[in-house]
Structures are given as C-alpha cells and as structure tokens.
Length: 355
Image 1 (tube, helix red, strand yellow):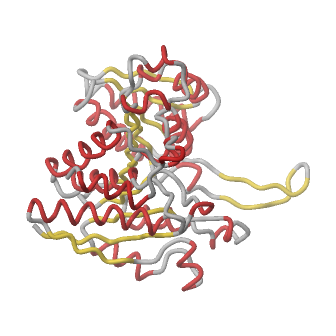
Image 2 (cartoon, rainbow, N blue to C red):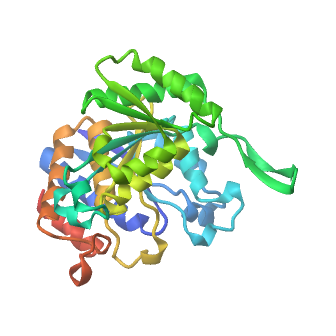
C-alpha cells in the first residue's frame, strides 16, 4: 500500500526526531510492503524566518492533500517577542482548524522498565497506570475572542472561553467510544463550580453518557484532578476535558511516566486524516546536539499507522520494539541514562534493530 505523509519537522529538535520516525516508517514499509511518500513543509518558527508567517498556505494545502501529517515541534525563545499572530504556535492552531481536527488523544502509561524513574512513591506506582487523555482541540479559550483594553484598573488583557453543545457532544462521544475499547470508564474534567462553560460541559456529557450505559462516567473538578493524577493515577482510564485543561493535565500525566519524551499524541477529526506529534516541545537547548529522545515521535508515527492507515499490526510491532529497547536498559539522557545515555541516532538504531 502507498501513503502520502506531510512532514512538518518544525523547530529545535523537530528535524532530528522526525527524521528518526521516518527511518522507522521506512523499515516497517520494507517489511510489510508499504511505501510512505514523505513531503516536507514549513510551519512554526522556521516558516516565519523563511516566509514571514508561521503557517504558509502551501503547507495547509500540502497537509490537506496528504493522507496524514507527522509533526516534530514548533517554537523557541527566538520568536518569544513576536506579536501574537506571528508566534510559531499559531501554526498548530491554524493546522488543527484547517484540517478539522477536534480531538486530541494523549496516552500516558508507566512502562515497567521505567517504574524507577517515576517521581511518585513506589507504593503509588505499584499498580501501574494506563490512561488516555481525550482533549477537545478546536474550541475553548485558545480559540475565543481576545485582546487588550482599558479596564477598571487600567490597561488589561482578556481571553474568552466559549463552547457549543455540538463541540461538547462530539468530543464526549469520542471519549465514550474510546472507553468501550478499554476499561469502560470515563472521567470528565471541568470547573463546574465556577465556570458557566463547565456547567454546560457537565450537562452535555451526562446526556451523552446515557447513550453508553455500559460505560461508567464520573465528574471531577480540574483542581482535584491535578491532585488525583499524582495521588492515585491508576484510577484513570479515559479522561475527557476541555482544550486548556487537557493541555495542562496531559503534561502533568506525562511527567509521572518518567519522561515527556515518551508520549505521543494524535489529533483527529471526522476523517482518517490526522496530525501526529510528540507532546513535548522543541527543546532548543539541545537542538542540533543529537541528544533528543525520538521515542515519542516514533510512537506518534505508530499511532498514525493505527488510526489513519488501519495498520494495527505494524503499529503493534513498533510499540513492541520500543518496549524491548527500554527493557534492555537503553536510555536517552532525559530517561536518566547518565554517562551511558544514547544519542538520538543511537536510540533510533536500537529501535530499528528490534524491527
């Protein structure tokens, strides 16, 4: 089979980790008889430098014509003082909107081989944890009206959160469908004791829950959720929440796995086309030094095979190869490898050796 993949390497360590994932895809393609045609496009800071804007129209059209999109990372201190519309992160928001991607799936689990790297007490980690964060991606405060104005105390800034019933319904259904394939438990995160959007969120999730009598549904306030993630992460199966809450909580969940460098993500819409990326940032402090951990990007490519291309067996093989490498004790610097830390290239070679 042949597939068209739009590559957005982006900024910082993005080019290194995307190149690693492409090598893994090429190896899988050779084994199973698939051809992955990868076309690079600009987005983020590198696009600003070359074209003056974070998301060129050529990139949008290239992604729309591809079967799926694999992204490294965007952003860095070089562009921190740019005005809002010329920040690298605008490229991500624009791509999600252009591709109609309203769901972000972020798995977080503890690998037995890395249990010792988990910052939580051993008794908390003893039962393990395996959760999926289902984050609404194109609504909420990141897409609401914003600006600056004169207020009661002088100059002020504002951001507005709004959610429609339709937006909440569709993300809730994704969560319940995902839970049906797992342990049949959904925890919905909101701030219904304060926010009107959260009250609508809770009402709507409860109504959708009635369509899934085989799946349990529990509400949890976001501040309690932040605490429960470090107190008892094993209780979480599928978590569904808003754009901003999901952004924050998924990063917290990543830290208790031992490294943010392990976690992939998939952004999906109503078609098979998705945007796949690691949840970590561009790490400009180690860019170009061959120190980056490529695992999250490689696992993002595996998610692409599973969700966009229906190549579940191939995805399983990549994930198993990562497991075997970690079980052998091989580590990059972010995983506490110390003097024996593998470079980005060496870790990629180790995973290729298991395929």
